[in-house]
Length: 63
Image (cartoon, rainbow, N blue to C red; front, side):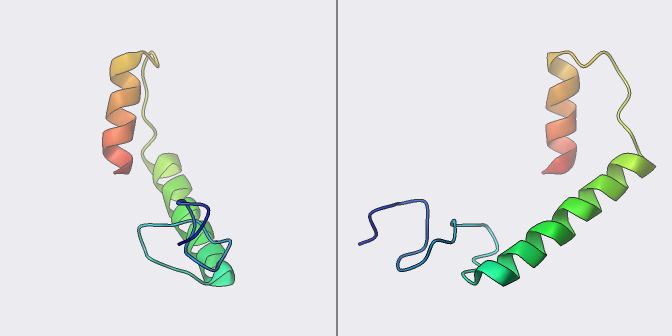
């Protein structure tokens, strides 16, 4: 069993929803997902007061 429960056994790769264990492939996936989220925010920004409800809606949109 790995000493760190947050990484895949025998690697330094953090556990992730896509179950990617290769660090280079994970870095590419993270870049793609981040870029897609940035494009969505630029296309459809969330306007508001940035209060608790605002942050909740932003989280729901990103899920």
